[in-house]
Length: 176
Image 1: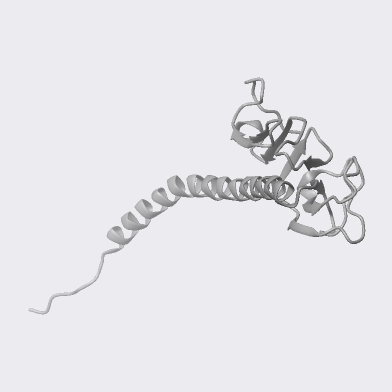
Image 2: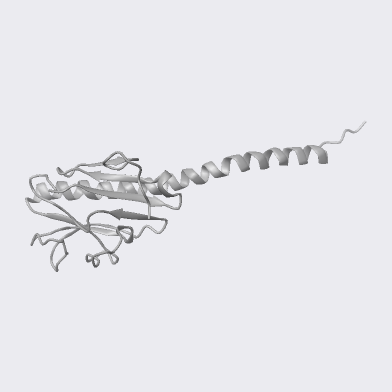
């Protein structure tokens, strides 16, 4: 007797139903993971720029600044959001607010972050050679999930950044 090999229609439908259930359960968490990774990438890039500016200010015994930039070359006009991108440069004339002039070395560039917003309470940041920034600053990273997924980079007067899920006053973060 020759035996048939294969699956019945009922077995195929049952297997597809299980597969659809697993995908329905797993895709939202995978999407959340991708959003978290994108936000973390931007935060890490910003924190790296802060460390670079602080270290270079000490190493060069001069002022190193960060500012929003839309072209990766010059500081953008005041009011430009930080998610447009930013630059790190040696601010040889130590102007305030910081503005990159011709001949000032460019140390780092970050591109536009289209998936989110980056709001800061400073229009530029400048690090001094003695390891201090001189003022505190807070930058809030938000995406389409709003305040529940927001993260803040809080910079102390000594220029050391830390990442937090809360504001500097331990309140909830807000997103625009």
